Length: 467
Image (cartoon, rainbow, N blue to C red; front, side, top):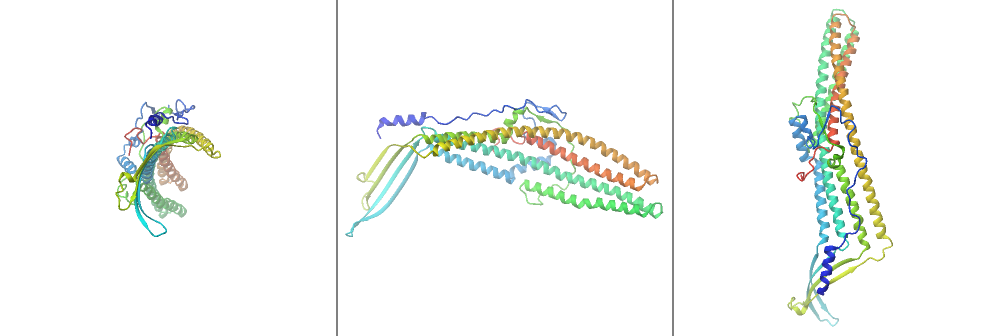
């Protein structure tokens, strides 16, 4: 190749433009300045992330901390997400290889002859190099797109991480819910057995009709029948927890055998301003990278409108079988630039560019939807947390009143001043109230977990979060 052309090609390589639009970070114009319920007593505003990165530690439960840490290491879905990131990294490596020369080598042997019957063997060897000069940035835009896809895969992994942590916490508290439900049901069973004993004594003394005894026994049997169902649901909750940790069924049975009922949550939930969601929510980050990838693909498509420049070189040898293959008399070489330009494709390139532009528009709208959904989820979780806590406080008073009513009713019944049907009604109401309070407390914990999840809690937004 004439040396006078070399500076032109290297200048094209170093200073060539990248066609297509450059990505600009999207802005969400309707982001509220504050959350509706942020002034509720349950919340406190913070500047930094507060306790959101490892929000589960606010429950002060070492077993919960251990379960979540193990799940974050062994969960099936999270491991699949990690593999997806790994695959995206390999794809990025493949894409980046387009910037570098390609070197090929080949060799062979052939027997050549004529129709008279004489023949002669020949050996050959060839070394070729080709390098596409990315003048218009088609390769670089492709790399930019794949790199954004890689970052989107990383963000998706963090989204899975958040889900796993919240799912483990919910499953754990559901297991503890059923433990306490069993305790409440058995306690009420003891109360009904005590009542049945009194009724039996009064029946023997002919102070009441046998119908009251039958009714009391039926109530006791009805309460007893709830226990197998609760025990089955408790086991199902444990199975779900074991699956989240990537364990075989039964692996946590010994570890959870001494677990008690639901905890009381009396702490504050840390809140940042809504704009911080754009940095904290991995699904928003993922949507932004997908938008970036789509915008880069526009430039990759537009590059097909322009010519492609390459430098190719070749060294080859072909010699008789008994000769020295690499003797200079048998060798030849060539080197020089080449250009290819698709001048007509019946609109294929044009429509591909339009397609990529449309896909970028779709990705932009998808990003806006994800942001709007994130704000909605936080608002809903906050309101639900506040109102559920209010409901729980009311139900605590309901339970206390029902317990007091039962104790008074039982004394009156023993004294013969209250009909059994009235006592039976008080017993039923007390059990329903206690179970309603327990369900409300569980729902309250679930709402707190959902709030931390919707705030993007459960991962670290920094370089150390490369698991």
